[in-house]
Length: 346
Ligand SMILES: Cc1cc2nc3c(=O)[nH]c(=O)nc-3n(C[C@H](O)[C@H](O)[C@H](O)COP(=O)(O)OP(=O)(O)OC[C@H]3O[C@@H](n4cnc5c(N)ncnc54)[C@H](O)[C@@H]3O)c2cc1C
Image (cartoon, rainbow, N blue to C red):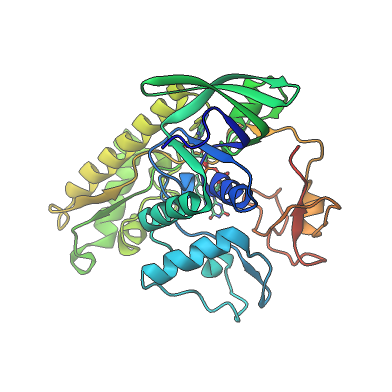
């Protein structure tokens, strides 16, 4: 599979949604492009993490984001026989404009599109050291059975945690309080019509009180437990402190996620009418929302974002409610111009 030896124009590290698109774009423009991905497939959080509902591409009745990401989403929906939301309607809730996709299919299509564009794809490989050179960058990477030097003119950090930026000794940002992680899984095999909501609720509260279940095992511990079962048993647990910045911390996050799945499965199977419940699916790793960020030359503030500031050197658009807005702020308010622009990564 080696196309370019150890010298490329563009080296992209991390093959999540961002890295795939960066690599495809560079290769389509004729740059000799290599993509290093530490995991087994492309797509990152959206495929391996199971967060398979990309958006938002539309705002207030018109499309505001397109490009290679949209191209991949459309192809995934089409090949899966899926249906796009009706984007002509302004939704009551932003998630009604998220596009439900088949994660494994997206991973396969992203891979095919990378290879068709001429990207050299290196799975199971990650950088271990690096330095700036007069021509660009020298990166040492390692993977199962290999360790090598790669020279590149442009280096793009799409690791989702500013790993390469940290490795090279540049500044990164991290908040004291980070958003929780989530291991995505689904439990089925029960008949909701046969269940006694009150009995289940008192068992749930007792399990929380005695520690058999924990507060983050459901994303909303205050909602009735029956609503978790009624909505299809799809977990969105909240793992507080989940961290993917090192192999050790991500191992811990995965172990905690799988412990949560076992706790919930055992609890559900202990209830009358749920004896046949089963773990229908589970992602291979806990998806971590937040670790390190690149300390960029410019930083987008909440005011920039909600007012739709367009930077002179913008390279893309972003549109989504702010997940954790300050108390009292309305994260869905309409921007003053089309949508927020993000600054160029140096
Ligand atoms: C549970 C959860 C729910 C979310 N819900 C939403 C939502 O509703 N709406 C929304 O807009 N966003 C949501 N997000 C955020 C969104 O999923 C992410 O912002 C997006 O997926 C990030 O894409 P990325 O390509 O930057 O990073 P990632 O998807 O994290 O991809 C990074 C890739 O880099 C690889 N990698 C990491 N380190 C290295 C390394 N050192 N060397 C080589 N490869 C490496 C990883 O294996 C991975 O494939 C959610 C995130 C989570 C975790």
